[in-house]
Image (cartoon, rainbow, N blue to C red):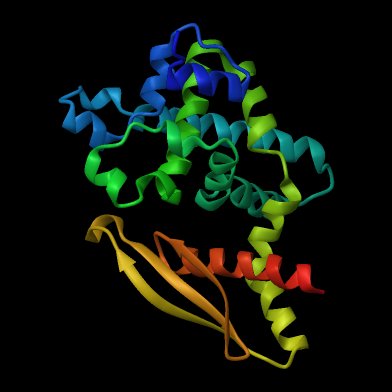
Length: 229
């Protein structure tokens, strides 16, 4: 018997749903629901809303317990880096969530499966679905395993623009971000930037804002340049 996408994803995340419909809803983008004339409440948006709240609670609890001497401002900064769109998109790519998402044809053709905003939303929607299906502790287990892992890498992402500036200064060069493209409708644009150092293109980044695209480019550049040291 052929395995459904939801059953395949259950194996990846190590959680078996009592109501598999919740997982399918968490994977359903509004564009797919609109094409299929499905009730708008059956896309992932409501579960994303719930998952966002659960994620903030779990990450706050984790940071509070793990860093007893850290001041509130730094805790807030660390939490922001852990649950930002780009960090959640990284988690989603690790799980290959893109291939499981139900997208409308137009959204799929314009790269929706790799769009950070959609991947991050689905990541949060799955948290909400697990919370609805199995309760807070099961959702917490998922967050701890897939979102709060690799914190060192997430911290690198948060600090990437500062770190890149330091690397460039050591080389007596400047980091130059160039906007090279904009795609998508006005309300959901994706910006693409190139990062140049010393007259050479080092990396590229994309995001829903120019700042997010620059952050992504800086992160990729830091990883590339550190590997060469």
